[in-house]
Length: 615
Image (cartoon, rainbow, N blue to C red; front, side, top):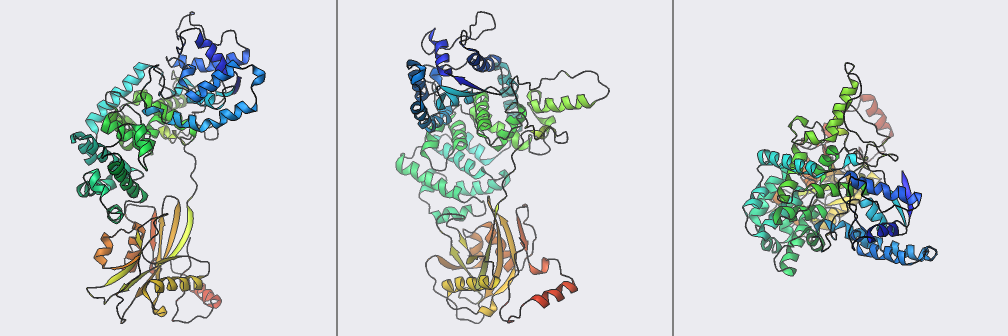
């Protein structure tokens, strides 16, 4: 239920002005606790009362007006000084112009220390209300539909969660190279750099894949200064195969900025890390600050999202802005101030090894007794049992006003087969955009020094920026045009070529983060021709051994396997790509062959027609 509140900022200020400036009214259990809405109108009492009750249930003090940010506070005080009739559209435009600045202040507040009043810099305990005050000081849409069921309501529960999780982590944590470096390194800048590299590599990449890359990276560039002096070509070469190649480029850009502009010293707080270093977002900044520098700041990645959503039975889409902010608030509330780095790593470790997306190991979970999702599973099992009478005594969400924002959506009710995996329910992702390309492996078998293949460099920006690939063209609807365009592309790099020898070999399907790219693979061996010894800028001839160590993408390595005659099928360990050759496809029937030959136009046998795209 959404309640529109007029003059909420004025009303709250009246409730707090009776005491000392900036002080919040006391929250007690007796009749002596006089709420600030006393004597106000019915609508105002209902709205502000809902806000008061949420904090009362959590055993925390409601945040006074001084805690919502300077722009919103000044706007609210200005509104209190003016009569109601004077507040018009001009004032609302001013508040709207402050929205972006206020969002930035709220977004970075987790890393800031508390100010003299004990409020400035704190994460909002009720972000929906604080953001509403920042946007519209006079007319606020107050979201009073988050049940305390989804919150940690007292210090004892938070302390128990911290203790159970950290004790488990001390016993069960995996021995990983970046953890050893963070524990053993005394120099803070080196420690932060080691954490930074690991966190960037681990984005969207499995731990088992990262270990070898991380070890080789730190051996080659053990310090920020070493990385800053490296070339982008070297960075791309070592990063090849890890995916999301812009990560390596931004990591080097950040290292150069630290060395050239910051005196070789890493920023020491999450807020300054995020603000000063390219490619460092809220999560990475929090991870570096907590693990390397001991700052008590929470982090939220995919694993932490899953843990928090299950522990507090949050079934709504975590990508939603309101839900995401609530998760960050929970993470900040839970982080252990004595061991912030270990706590954050423990939460991520729990999500990666125990509280997994499918088939979680609930019996091994150290916080099972505090998990709302597990309690829901038990309640559903008890309710389904015919041998028990009455309702089980298990707490559940019971919002007093409308549908709870954090519960499972009404369109997706509880699924008994999923169990705790009901939380969270993510919105369906948009399928990747489909694109097609024709690419050719051009080889000189009799080149001086051994057989060589042609590679060209991709543009400095965009997909796979700066990496090397086989000459390629975008696939056109007309196959003859595709064949002609590919031949022209090859000749632009290597000069006149025998068109009759260009052979179609198969196709490779590779899925990037947002693109499903199908490569039609061709091969052309320059047998009996004078070796090409010169190439234009942006091209090079490499031996097969040099190719495998060059800065090329995984997709190009699969293309080369097709050329070499290998037919591995689905790439080992991945369901995101497919290699297909003519011999591996299902053979057509004799009748289909007759029909195909009847409708196929007559073409020269010297100019093979490429196979059509299967996608």
